[in-house]
Image 1: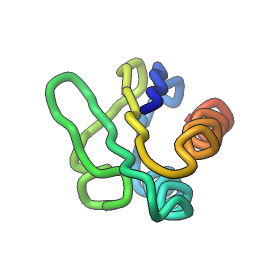
Image 2: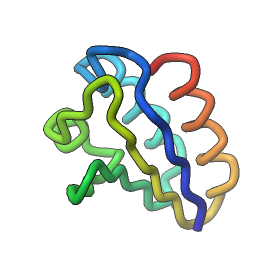
Image 3: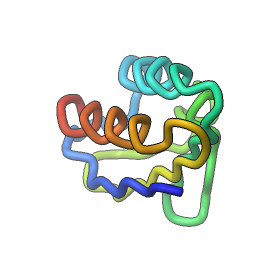
Image 4: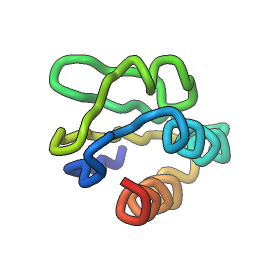
Length: 86
């Protein structure tokens, strides 16, 4: 299991556009379970409604938990996306 923790830099946080992009990246790893946690709420990173409903805003710390086949690559891709877009 890999974890990626990131403080959102974009003041808007994970709104519709980056949520869609994030879900597309997560879906690339079909054999990985990818979850996003903000405070005490955890959602499936492959479900856009859950990602948006998380309500992550700029300055929030989100934690991604990745487990399964290809978890190293998936975690690295998520971390790159976060740094480049959020």
